[in-house]
Figure: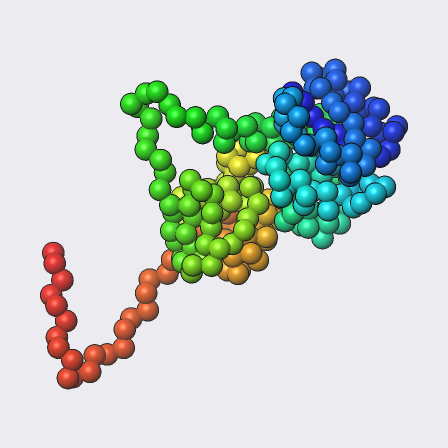
Length: 257
């Protein structure tokens, strides 16, 4: 698996390249944002499966690099940085990062996260090719709830006709919860379905994505946290009763049984 490491600290990069190499990764080390963007230009070689992106780069901020990567590529990006504040986490995820890991980190956890986002990033390609069997279910139609339309084939979301751009993880999270409004999805299940990994130690990541969804959709009460369990999409409330009919109006039609 090819991996692009964007890190200006030579000592940190050398240690990472050595460990990743022992685990079967082919690592290219980019020391600046400009070098990282050049490395991602298609050149006929096997594409990178994951980008490990430091934020404190010498020529430009890692957030800008992530934004430019996401504008032209769907390669999964893991931000690996010493910036542990929640605002940086939210900003990075909103720019399209697939995960956010703070230094210092456990190497085993980083490896697990790399494999998780690589599997997730490869999933769309795996299902895109037409299958040669009659047993394949038909394409999934759109989901609609509370004025939200989720086009799962084109991965687009709109609220009352207004397009809402979401990151990959935000879309997958919303699509999962919208499958069964009112049903509580356990944290373990959410991470298994969306992140393809365990949820232990990742609770803050899930909270950030939920908060970002509420903000982008402009529906703060859309997703409810069920304490100690997980999250659910609040189902559409029954329509409010109509006002009493005017005596001059014709009587309502008798409903069909």
